[in-house]
Length: 413
Image 1 (cartoon, rainbow, N blue to C red):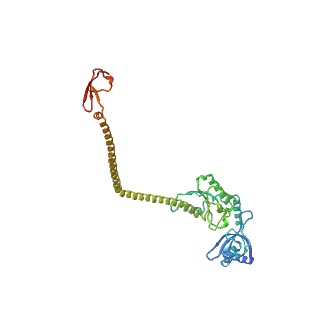
Image 2: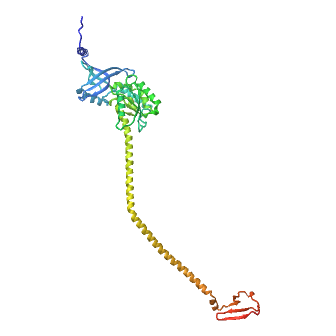
Image 3: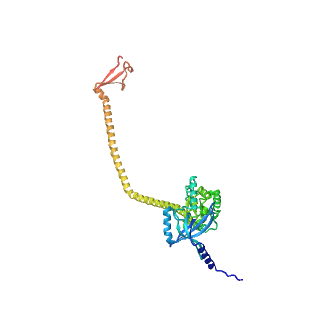
C-alpha cells in the first residue's frame, strides 16, 4: 500500500498549527540574552540561551524577536529601571509567544519584560571572576607591561583553519609600508568545552620560548556571543593576566566582551584589527624616526646655510678688517716711533747731561786748574814725586807752579 507523502512545507505547516493549538497563550520565560542585534527597521533579533548549573555548557537555545513597535518602548524602560544596557550576557524574564514559521522555524516573540529580573548568570560570572582577580592583585598585571616599540615577533593563538587567522596574517603581510613581521601559530580550539585548556596549553608553549617573541595575539572570528563562553573562565583569565608578554585579544565582534578581553594588555574588535594595531605601533615608531630624520636633515641644511651666510659675511668683512688692521698697525707703528723718538731724546738728554757733568769734573781735575788754585807739582826726571822716601840727597827737582817753574836740589831729607 502506497503511503501518502507530505512536502516539507506541508509538514512545517502542520507543526505550526500544532504549536499554535498546543501553546496558544503567552509565557513568562527565564533565559539569558545572547547575540542581541538591531536592524535598520528597529527590530531586535537575539538568542535566548540556558546553561547547565555546573558550568558554561548550553542546554537550550532559541531564536527571539522583538518587533520595533515593542522594542522602542521596552528597551528604554528596561535600561532606565535597571541601569543595565539591554545587551548580550544578561539574564532576563520575558513574556513571549511561541511561533513557528515554515521557512525560519521555531522562535519566541517578546511581548513584555520584567526589569526586576537582573543581570544574568553569564555577566554575573564574569564580574565574580574579575572581582577575584582584583582581590588577588593580578587583574592589571598584563596591562602594566610595556608594549615593545617594534612588535614584530608575534606568537599567535588561534585555530589554524579559522578565517580570522588568515585575515590577520594577510593584513600583516600586506601592510602598506612593508614592515617585516615574523608570526608563529600556536594552534588552539577556539570554541566549545576545550577552549580553556587549549589556550592555556598554547600559552605554556609560548612561555617556554618567551625570549623569541615580543607579543602574544589571541584571535578568533566573530559569531554568537554564546559561542564565546569558553573565554569567560577564571583559569584562562588568571593565566592571561599574569603572562609576562603583552597579550592582544581580537576574539569577536565589537559587541563581544569576554573576561580575557578585560585582563589583556590590549583588546581590539577583530583579528584584522589586531593586525592593524601592530602595524600602527610600527607606524608610530617609523613616523618618529622619519620625523627625527627630517628634523636632522633640516637642521643640517639650516646649519650649512647659516655657516654659508656667516662665511659670506666674513668674506665681505675681510677687506675692511684688513684695512682696519693695517691702519691700526700703522698707527701703532707711528705711536711707537713717536714714543721711541721721545724716549731716545730723553735718554740722549740724560746721557748728555751726565757727560756734561763728567766733563765738568774732568775739567776741574785738570792740572792747570789745580795749579791755579795754588797747588804745585814736583817732578824728578820728568815724573811727579809722590813720596819723599823715593828722593835722596843731591836729586835735582823741578817744581811746576801756576806761573813758571823752580829748579832745586835735595840737600837734606
